[in-house]
Every structure is written in structure tokens, then in C-alpha cells.
Length: 321
Image (cartoon, rainbow, N blue to C red; front, side):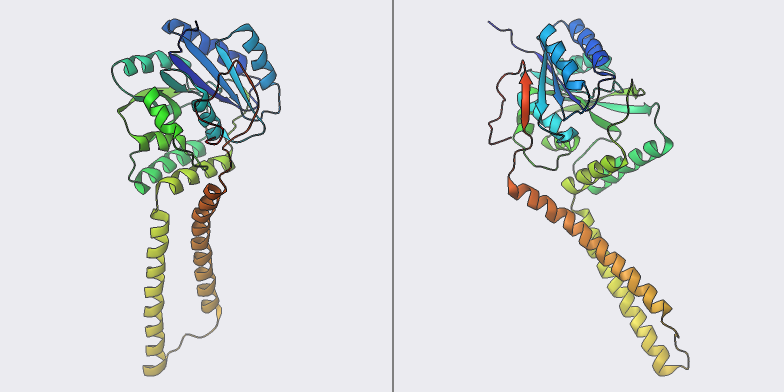
């Protein structure tokens, strides 16, 4: 009879051949030290290097290790979702493969879970090996997100966290396409606490979150949990309309009651360019919301698997994926 899994560790990977062996070694050492049944569930998000091949070799040697191979790159947040769909443990631990988030924190998370907490997230107090721009933009994003939404999403936290089985079940019921997992974990609630840590430099390889992907993730976070961009667009429209009305009154007064007029067309063109720019920005905000509605109505699966190793049947049906 197969032993019930106590802890499931979800590790999304994308072109991580330089680090995946070390990730496996450190995670195995940590999970063995806990002394309870576990699984390491790697989700290969369409890697184009030898990442999948390396993990497949490990699955033959160690049945604790399991692998989901996506048919293409579906994205980091979708890879985490797939891991939750297939995870069997009483706890579900999410950690990236780059080792910036230390696996050695997992036993502390497990202890907090045994104290009764249902979500234990890791909060960064320092970020090593990152540029000033990356640190500044990350701090700005988290604080903008906190100010924009009524959901209490902790600042300076990533996806590195432990969740109780009941939290994972709640997350599985949420199948929206443009996902921001750490925000969804906050939205579902339950008893949550933090563990502080210093984030290390990447062990090897290059970041898989360049500026373009960071901007997209930021937009998903803000637009998925707040309508304030729409409200700001409306308030901006009211403000510009009021300013235009005042300018019209001033212009009529100068024309009818004084000898002064405002000559030239440069100021008119400047105003038109400004107003057209604001209009296009507002349309862009509306387009982002409408695009998300369109994505949901298509009802496509979140991901498609090409192959799998050592994996049981998913905890959600094919249609729900």
C-alpha cells in the first residue's frame, strides 16, 4: 500500500538546466530532514534546454520526484496552478528552482503549519544580487497594489509559501486565465502568517522574469484585484472636462470684454495632443479589462500536457483545466 503524501513541493522550471540538479539536491536534503512522506513535483514550462531530460533521469532514480511537461510555455503562474492540480500532500509548498528562495526555510513553514496556520508565506527583508531598478520597481508595485485593492496582499512577498490542503482545494476552484497566484491566496483567506528571510542571488543561469514579464505580472495583479484604474480614468475625465469648461469661459471673457486674445494655434495643438493621449490611455485601460473578459469567455484549458512522469491522476477534471 502506497504511503500517503504529507508534503508536496511544487517547482516550476523554465530553461533551468544549470541549476535543477542543485535544486533537487537541496530540496531532497531539506525534505528528508523533516522525516515525513513528500513529493517533489517539477512542472516543465516548455523549456528549450535539457531541463526536462535532467528531471526525467532523476524520476527514474527517485520516485519522490514527479514531472509534468507542458506542450509549450504557458507561464509561471499557470505552472504553479498545474502543480496544485496534481499535488497530493496535506501541505503544498511553492518554490522557484533558481534557489533565490532558500529551501532551508521549509521546516520553519511546516512548524508554523503544525501550530495551526493555513498559509505561511515568505517575506523578503533584503534582496541580494538585484539591481536598484529591480528593487525600486518591486517595492513600488507592491505598494501600488496594496493601495489599489481591498484585498490584503502582503508587500515584499513572492510565490514562495506553504498552503494547507484546504487552501489548495479553494485555489483549484478558481480557474481564471490571467492569474496572480499570490493575490488569489490572499483573496481566499484562511489563517495566514509570514516568515522573514534574506533573498539570495540566483544560484546559476539567468532570470526568467525580464522587464516585459514583470510588467505583465504587475498588470495582472492590479487589474485582477482592483477597479480603481477605471475609477481613476473616470475622475480624470471629470477633471479634464471641468478644466476645459473653465478655459472656455476664460477665453470667451477675454474675447468679449478685453482687448486681449490668445494668438496662435500651438497651444491648441498641445491641448489636442494631451487630450488625445489621455483618451487613448483610458481606452487602453478599458481594453485590458475587456481583453480579460474575452479570455474568460473562450473557456480554453489553462494548460496542455505533453507528457508526465511518476504522476497520479489530477485532482481536477480535464474540463476544469
